[in-house]
Structure formats: C-alpha cells, structure tokens
Image 1 (cartoon, one colour):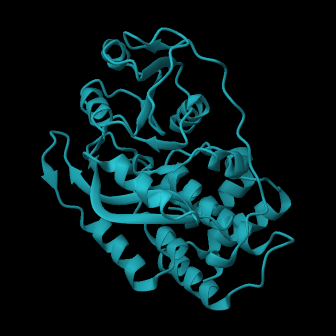
Image 2 (cartoon, rainbow, N blue to C red; image 1 turned 30 degrees about the horizontal axis):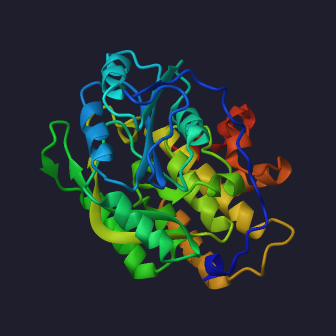
Length: 338
C-alpha cells in the first residue's frame, strides 16, 4: 500500500504551554523524581468528578511500567478539581494542575509537554484501563521498531459502568480486516475510537506536532498525520480499554460539526500524501479505495473543496490551520457537511 512506502519528510512542533503550578503526592514535593517506569499517562479532566477516581485507580494499578500520571483539569465546573486534588495527595507518581477551559486538544498538549517518559499514554477522565494494558502495548512497540503508536480493541460500558455492546465499532474493525488499508478504514470509521486508546513514543510529537484544535476529530487527525508521514500503527486484539458511553460524550453532539471535521482531516491527509512536492507516485488502487470511502459517506465534494483550500494555505498540520475561520469556505461546504 502507498502508506507503507511513504517516508517522513515533513515535521511539526507544538508550542509548549506555560510551566504549571502542580500538586503531587506525599513524597512528590517539587523536584522529586517520578516513578522508574517508561510510560507517562496523561488524563485531560473535565466535569468528571463521578468517574475520575476509577480512571486514576486503573492507571496506578498498571505496575512498574508507569512512570507518572499527569492530570490536567480543563476548567471543570463540577467538583472534579477538588476530587483530583485529594487523589493527587495519595501517590507520588501523580502530577496535577488546573487551567482555565481551553478544550481537550490544548489540555492534552499541555500534559504531553510535561511528560518525561519514553512513551505517552492518554486516558480520558471517564474511561479506564484494563490491568496490564500498558505492559502489553509497550511490548508491541518495543517489538516493532517501525511502529510508533499502539492501540487495542475496546470494551464498552454505560454511565453506570455496566457492559454494553457497540455494533458500530465492530463494523468499523471489520472494514479494516476486509480492506487491509489502515487509512481508508480509519476514514470510513474511526475504530481507534478515542485518544484513550493511544500509546505512542513521546518523540513522535516532535515530528508530527501536537493535537489540533478540533473538538471531534483531533484523535483521527493525529492518527492520519502519523500515516501520512510513513509511521505505523499497531493493534492488539485484546480488549484493554473500557470506553464509557453516556450523554455527555462529544460523539453525541452536533452531527454537522462532526462531518465538517471528518471532511477536513480526510482532506488534509490526502493533501499531505498527494500534493507535497516530494510525494511519491500515487498508488491509484489505494486512491480508488479512499475515494470509494468518501463517496460512501457523501464526503468527496467537501474533501475536494478543502484540499483546494489547503493548497492555497500551506500548513504543517491542522494544529496551525485556520480553515474553520474562513466563512466563505465553511458556507460553501455547508450543504455537504449536514
């Protein structure tokens, strides 16, 4: 496939946030060395006072592989910050601070900037890790020098923690098995599902940049940016992540805005692999597979318009792109992203 032959030529760098004032556990006064493990876990916390305890416990139980747990409260309006401050006093591996609401992408970037491990894992504040998740996914990355991001299969739960089924996710994974094309399958349906499913080499952010200011598709954009630069994603078939589905999930919000971001990240991916001056020859079979996916979801026309915009407004990543502020573009896309 064309994606396996792409070489990393473009680079991206995210600006670091200001140095936060942090709270740490009982042995964790400022300057105390974190754990000896290799993984920094970042939790972006927002209005999940009810769930954050379970999320934190699932991280701390991962064992020696854990180096530190970095929790950043994104201006929660409930008791999340107070609950987390109490948890931070119980373990020296926890680093915690709050900042005014900036969105999930900025909160993730702030936490990653603070991380010191060889690997970064993300966990949203309403999800939880299964025991042994970090060991298994780090082993996948350690055993494959060409892979930079590892993810797993997922089990689903409702707001009360009861197991539920998700037929959509099963169908999205089946598309990957059918096509064998990671990018086309992700564009068809993001089976990675969430940033909670990401474990990646920390050095990767220096190459591809941080998370873009997208509300719904920052995870898909990050994954596609890796693929566009010739990096690989490896998957474990084990269900090592518990994903919570409830009314406040962002995936239950505006369908119009989801489609706009879906089209934008798809267009930026195609722009990156086809339009750059040093792009390899187009693999037309893969190109056909990709356009079949965009046709299936009625995204081909908005993707073409967005690609034209990206050609005229070069950027190393959507992290630095102002496409959503161009009212003429958004108005032109309107009928096709609804």
